[in-house]
Length: 311
Image (cartoon, rainbow, N blue to C red):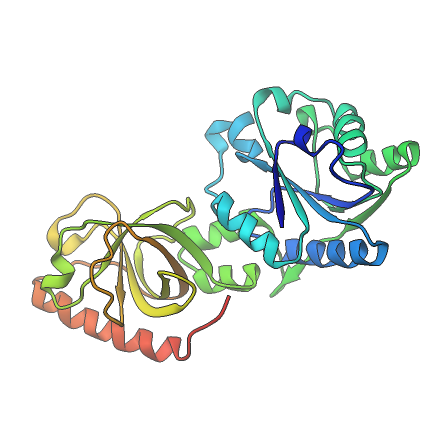
């Protein structure tokens, strides 16, 4: 997949592609329906499939106090879009100046002049342009004027719930990683880097990778059955998120105990897929009691995880 940073750099690059527009945070099951149709239409027409997305998230620019905790880093978003067969992704830097562009100017200047779109595939709830005045109705009307087709994809449901990034964020914030997985179509992934921790886990007999997250959307405090990733292969593990109450900690830490030994992980990139929640964080009267509980957590996680899951 080719990545183009900034819409103006795409000028003259594309010829009559099929285009979709959105933030695509999480690339969830609703997004996947759009991407599947995008790929199918583009292949049938013999043209490129193009995603136009934005970074940072528009809400974080227009209303910083309401900025969402994103489900993915930009890198993970791009990697996932590539896995769904997108040919070109244009990442437009979203700024206050860009937010001030009117809906009409956005269509004429970018969708028509720059991207040269012959068809747009969009979600039913799309809004764009200054004050979010542009809608799917705006696009349909503009399509008649400029000569591009518009197809609107309706809501996608899973387990009776309309799939939306904000719903998934709430599931993760509540610790319901199973529900999040069903809506995403895969486990929620937190990416980060291993940093030096207190070393208490090793002292208890359960060495951990202390992870500094890059992903903003972190499950609520608790203990989870997880798969860790140092590369492409999933490693069964248990992950604890919380304030280390047994030791009087105050800062939230993410600690993953891998069931295999990998030596010193300090400074290495690391990812965690959250499979299921085991229990709440709790305070134990002694390190020995905590170690006994960790042994039970490990046994329960091994039973849950079974064979490694592929993404």
